Amino acid sequence: MRVLICGFLVASLTSTLTAQTRDEVVRGDKKKVEAAGFWIYNDLPKAFAEAKRTGKPIIVVLRCLPCHECVKLDDELVDTDPVIRPLLEQFVCARQVATNGLDLSLFQYDTDQSFAVFFLNADKTVYGRFGTRSHRTEWLGDVSLDGLAKALQGTLDLHEKFDSLKTSLAGKRGAPMEVASPELYPSLKGKFKSELNYEGDVVKSCIHCHQIGDAQREFYWQAKKPIPDKVLWPYPHPKSVGLIMDPEEMATVLKVLPDSQAAAAGLQAGDSIRSFSGQPILSIADVQWVLHNVDPAGENVAVSVMRKDRPLSLKLSLEDGWRRSSDLSWRATTWGLRRMASGGLLLETLPDDARRELSLPRDAMALRVKHAGKYGPHGTAHRIGFKEGDIITEFDSRNDLLAEQNLLTYVVTSKKAGDKVPVKVLRGSQKLSFKLPIQP
Image 1 (tube, rainbow, N blue to C red):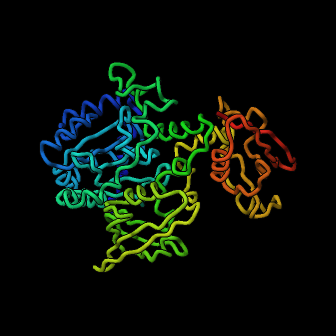
Image 2: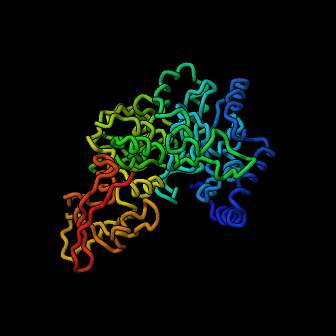
Image 3: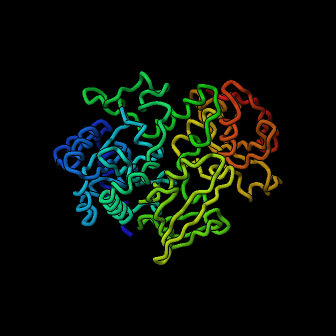
């Protein structure tokens, strides 16, 4: 498998990033890419104009700089690949290294990623997306060069048949978001402009992808509204419904977890997903797009597959609350949720052996404080007396919040800033009680 992770390249580029300042990395990247002339750099209007002129489809790579994780997906590794390079030459290639001024009615994606790919028509129809993440640092198992090559070829196939497929592609563009571009969110407004400031501190002028997710959550929280499930649990990974996709293929099932919703739908290993909710599928990111936009109450999603050259039509039935089975802990935006909900505590579920030592039942709440923030709003819990090693056994008179994300979800969907929540804690042999203020 030609994964998008190259040990030697990662080591060499990481050492380069360490030696350079972040500002030097950004300025150097701009100079290098513009000199090469292959990618249109931070100029999406130019890319769309070029696509109209040439009739080519567009690939837009959103890549955070200077994110150390992105060196694992560095464009140099992609550009020189003998399979991918000839495919890229059939596209108008655009590279976007900041989200300032980004059209959020068009570019909608999982903002906890720092590498996301869009395939588009010149008229702004979205052919598909590529790139996903289910861990803070590990990408293996989700994306590969082979998968990217097949998504590129799949896009070219869709582009060739665009007129007949345009209706089926309509669902790949979402409804307008709360604001038109990131810098217009209230928590970002006045701090950032619609363009990078290459004349000054360019790094500090950049809106990073995860800041969009932070700002979107803040939009609801500051308005004293519950954060919607779609915003709190964005872009569910297919494994949340029991579907493990093959990263080396375009949209092929590698494995189906037993007793899952995918298994109940009749999906099997080896199935090639041709359409999902009526939309052509190019990658795991396209599957996530459909799941992201499913009604929160759950519904039946049409799945068309090819199984050993035989077309099949299936229905994926999603249960109420299915979205909440996803893992929030790896997401950068969880840091902001911890400020709101737990006063800056990083919590972990107490393992079974530690439970036995303390005579705590397996099905009872036992969240150990792994870290307590010390500064600003993230230091709230620490200042009122919480310490690392404390075990929370009851929160707001509930003892059924068995994981950190259960606690975070409970607070940001049912509480408001300024509320005070009673918390019971076990510290060694001591039983303590605190009143934890929910943070704005």
